Amino acid sequence: MPDLQLIHGNCIDELRKLKSSSVDLIIADPPYNLGKDYGNGSDSMSAATYLAFTRAWLQESVRVLKPTGSIYVFMGFRFIARLYSILEDELGLQFNGWICWFYTQGMGKTRGFSPRHDDLLFFSKSDKFTFNLDDIRVPQKFYRSRNNMRGANPGDVWEFSHVHYCQDSRTTHPTQKPEGLMERMVLASSNPGELVVDPFAGSGTTVRVCQQLDRNCIGIELSDEYLDIIQSRLQQPFAGFDSIDPRMKRIPNDLNDPALRQEYKHNHIKWFLSHHETELQAFEEEFNRKYPARVTL
Image (cartoon, rainbow, N blue to C red; front, side, top):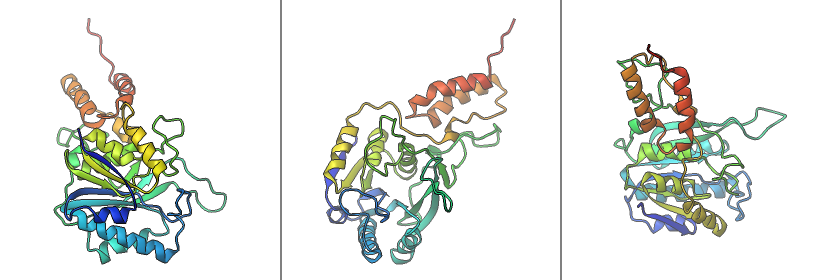
């Protein structure tokens, strides 16, 4: 069983208590300073105060990261450029990707374009960072024997739906992230038994994902209310992550050889639908529709 620790406190103070070079992966979803109500005023600072706060927790994050460690940071549009500059120019981290999380539903606007994405910066402490590409590939559109049938690189535009209010995993946290989103980062940038830290645990999505993927995790959270929510969430039975990249259900065309087709079907479930049990029936139905069994007389 993974070691899961929930810590009540300010992330800067709590990160200072961790040993230097002890953490494999940090996934951070800090307040964007847009005035959202988290119950503690953490999203309503002056710009100068917010940037000072950002530098402080990032400095501690860099200190605790291993040389092979990585950090992913969510950020809103107002501060994303300055966040990039802090990570690269001030802290000397290596840039690895600017990821766009695309979602189909969001705030509607009558003047200007409605936002339909969040930004996510991916940096590492060195060029020797962990990256498990095979664990995060997506199915290809066509079967070709010369291609890697383990799948393709998912790229830097990720589509995951928001966690809808009707879903069992939905909490009262206003910016809860989908589990499939965190799953991809955890799989890509850490290995089983390694340590993941979430300095802004919020609704506990990162901790819940680490629980199921056999990663040790420390979740730091300022709010007693949200800590109680995380504790309850970790005790719930697991029936699959609450979101999935739609491409994971894509079945390649041209699987014409029956033996190859059956081998691929078995591997598809293992490679792409592990921890997504709720998708298995729909996958089976679509596979059988696309490749119906031929009756021989």
